[in-house]
Length: 224
Length: 113
Image (tube, rainbow over all chains, first blue to last red; front, side):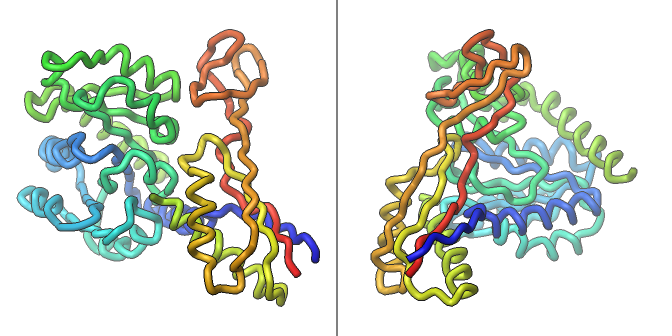
């Protein structure tokens, strides 16, 4: 009997695929975000409102991940932008290979500047899987409670931006935006927080302007 | 539960290594799981047991070393371990922390016959 050293990352295959995707996205000037949240925090509404505001300013494509149904991609059809549904079957998260399989589709859309990947609604598993995106964006909503970052720290740790959504419901809950921010920043002090409501539209312009800036910034880096 | 797909990735790597080395039986597999990952060791043990049944890996022991979260404070240079996931320096409460460990999800070694 003897010991054999391996020294491999368990998710090395996923990471290799993700790195390849990221490189190709960057070469083509595509900035990509991976939207992650628990089910029902308003990811699809955020995608809709974001597309509504930005589609005449930048070329957007969306990949929507769900365990079952293409209801999300149907909701996005009215905006006449490229939308691809990935149905995972049973898996609770998207992985790099699932995204990899739709990359050829994305590239024939031509000139896409922003790719929004809407992950399967789940706050735990998607945090572990790199899809090749430029950054993860966490979404939490007012009805979920302001202690969410402490309960599900991995996602907040892995994300660069946080959207606190459904702020129109603040008056009906004891949710405190300050406390939520404080909790999120304890986990990840570099996190940038946006407050949004897809019902009143509050905060969406600020979020979209920031997103557009990031797309432009990425284009400048890629162009060099 | 993503521990199942993590287990399958792990088994793929082990099978490759065993094939490469012409080894037929695995006695023990050592892995490291950082406490910053969203991976539950107990679930990994369960999945490993289920996924290796009726395969050459059946009966192998899975040893999981949990790696604590540690970091260096970029403001006061304090090096520290963290029990929870809060990322503030215990000395100066600064938030600019460089993580040293906690993100591991690695196969360390295998004991083969």
